[in-house]
Length: 221
Image (tube, rainbow, N blue to C red; front, side, top):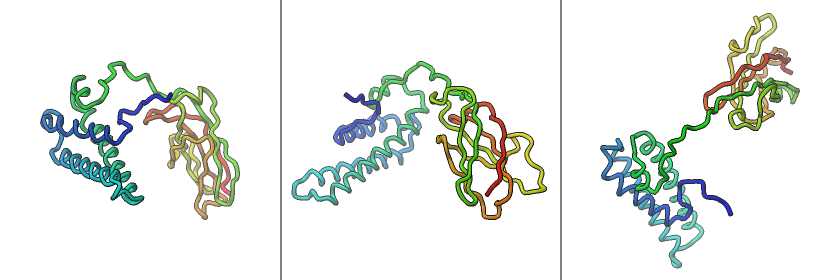
């Protein structure tokens, strides 16, 4: 049996009920929780639109594929707004456990989140793909690639023309992109053919970075 890990109820009726609770509770907490009245007004309007769309989709005389699609759209809008509302107004103010319970949410866990600083080090291997394209492969030198803290990495690179001074250390690389793939692709400009690209990589997680991997180079085809 699957375990419900999301705080948002699964059924539409329960989602409407939760929205009703939020509207009632937040109406009395606008000042205490620093919630703009316009945000509560918008939540109320989106909730009402979802309730009306559900009634139309449930009614045998008005239920059509179009009304069903509109109902889905209305509830996607409601749940999306509720997720954003929770992030904006329920996580910053000093809410008590009783406040979370009144909103139909689980009280906050007082235990600190385990550290997520990357501990792995990785290197880049390049390979030919096509004209003006190089594939890059991430090779873990140290650390466990299955550790969530080590899942993503930022690949830094710079393109250097013949006669230009190449970078001497990874910190001098000027361009970068983030990826969670073990293999990725870089497409270069037409005029970069024949130039040299220098690479280095850092494992990265939520802005926290691990140690630099070795800098390598390749000729752009």
